[in-house]
Image 1 (cartoon, rainbow, N blue to C red):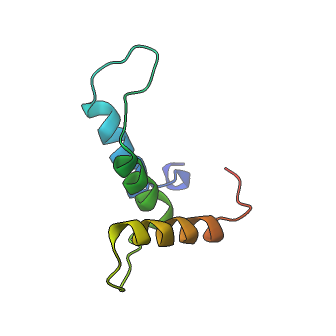
Image 2: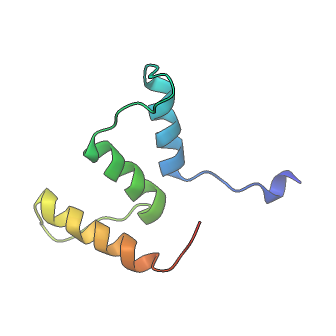
Image 3: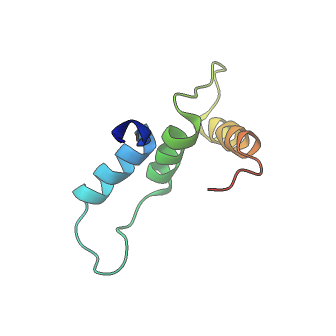
Length: 77
């Protein structure tokens, strides 16, 4: 039956490491920067996605979000 278990994505692993490494905030989750969140989402949804164009970070962020949105359009969890 273990063969049916889904393998964790790099994003899931990084998120769990973040949670484990954070201090307790009671019932609330620990705070996360936008950069940390975007990196976790990139690893989860876009895997090893990268840009070959020499874009500034802000433009790469736009490209990454576009890739995620249009790749997973209509997909429900």
